[in-house]
Image (tube, rainbow, N blue to C red; front, side, top):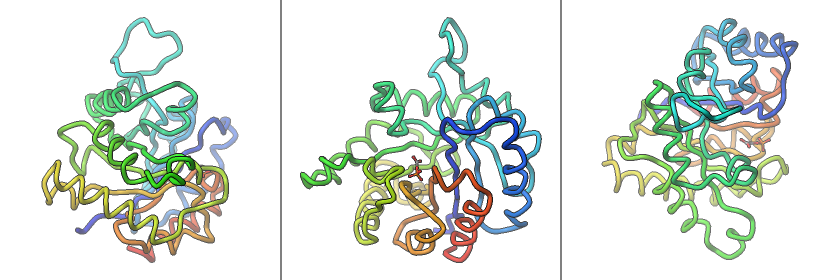
Amino acid sequence: MGRRMLVAGNWKMNGLAASAAEFEAMRDGAGADGPEVLVCPPATLIRLFSDLAGGRIAVGAQDCHVAANGAHTGDLSAEMLADAGASAVIVGHSERRADHGEGDAQVRAKAEAGWRAGLTAIVCIGETEAERDAGRTLDVVSSQLSGSVPDGATAANTVVAYEPVWAIGTGRTPTLPEIAEVHNHLRAQLAERLGASVADAVRLLYGGSVKPANAAEIFAAANVDGGLVGGASLKAADLLAIVAAARSAA
Ligand code: PGA
């Protein structure tokens, strides 16, 4: 136990240089102690934000290529993201899986690429609505967890984010027992694979329509160690309210 809460903001394809003021408001409002706060802006803003970061706020990336360099037009390596100031990288987000056809093997390789560059990999998994309706949620997240999380995962190099696809950007969330069921299941599966002490320390985030209004109850659910927040991470007031909820839940 003793896991530190983490609130990670995923800005997706939003934000221009003018958004630096919003990031600074997040930095200044995050306070001196409490949950860890990570903002993952588009790659174009990583250098700018990491120059402004400090205190408890850090900067992450949203994706990386598996290779360190080479002939991959338009792609960015984990080494480049680290060089720009990122300390973490999201891999396997459902929008990458859907828009770019990324599967578990590729996600796993991306997580390892992140490690190679010294980044923490935030590995995303989650079922579709059809899979939940068919009663397949635990099977789906189990198979994604085993396929996407590399051997050698530790609490220092890996965070797992459970994000039901149908909850992302929809304003809908699973019930608290549904969230707890998945998180308990993931923790148990990690314990079988990595041993109890590693599994106990790995943080499990919930993501999908986390807002100031629901963050406190979600963060109080069993085995929820914070959130991966999309839309509500774009505004400092919303993100800071979610950070405050994580602080109370810690
Ligand atoms: P949302 O996105 O908070 O806007 O639902 C979460 C995510 O996709 O990480």
